[in-house]
Length: 116
Image (cartoon, rainbow, N blue to C red; front, side, top):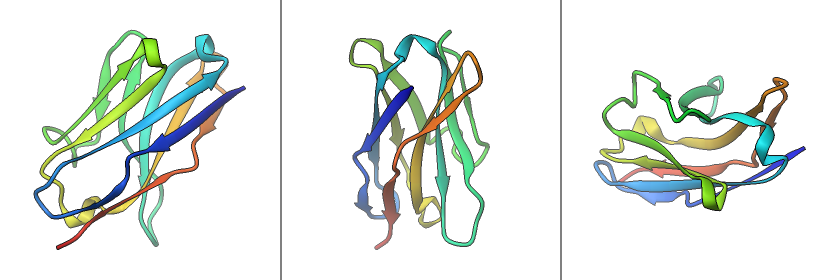
């Protein structure tokens, strides 16, 4: 079992920056990939960024060059730094952990609102 707790969401103006965090606990050693997803009203949940245990990363085209995913292994925490935010980035952001046995765990989500 893996438990995930997100934090750091909030309200930011267009063009601003925000960072969200995801702290993992439980069977940490079984995780091979961590990802950030988002879901806005009326839309499907979509991948934003992911980071593998190897350190390699992947991003949705819509956030490339603006968002950066990183991790602190000592703190069992994954971060998503979001720059040049746009109103269309408004969503609930969820953290997901995928284990080597392909089990997926989700956090409770944190709201990010980009508005003037």
